Amino acid sequence: MKKIYFPVFIVLILSSCLGYKELPVEYDYSYRGNFKKYRTFEIMRPVGLSDTTMTNEVIEKSIVSRMKFLGYRQTDNKPHLIIGFKMYADSLRFNGYNQPDIEDWIKSQNTDIEYDAKKLDLKTGTLLIQFFDRRQNRSIWQGYATTIYGGINFNSERHLRNAVISILDKYRFMAEGFTEGTTAQVNDNDL
Image (cartoon, rainbow, N blue to C red; front, side, top):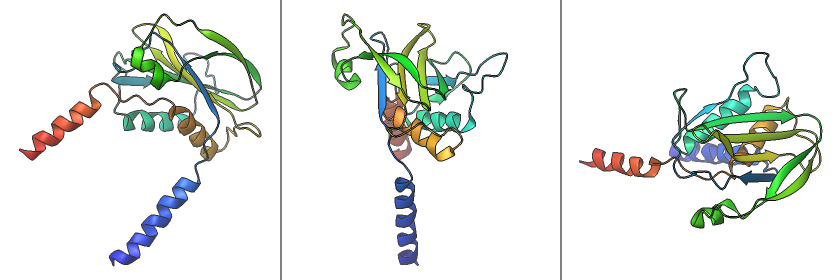
């Protein structure tokens, strides 16, 4: 019996990997971000008139899933991070920054570096995801993706999930205490 299930398992794994196509992503960040100190998050939702470019169930679920994978806890009570997104159907000029890779910068956390602005011409069908530090009341990280050969199809769940995964793959910070809490829990269970 085990021999029958194993090939089916391999086929399922391979088919899920084949459905994912990493998109080109740019990101930039604030030198004031406390990337190793965040533990909680919430999704930003527009108030008043509903802006359909800032609400999407597939995008929200994909963000929540990724953040929980990184050990963050979702809460509406004073979250450390507020995560917003916007879908741009038209092309746009966007201000970004030439910065050191975030993993390199985090080693020194030098806040005296100057921001080197750059103009980006983004194609139609761009997804932007921003992380806001609620306590600092500022954006601390943003990632944006579009396809090389055309825009993201916002009516396709697969395109949306691929875009979110591609963007959030660039945000690689586990929640503060997540790995220590996991280790402590394993040790408590071993007693």
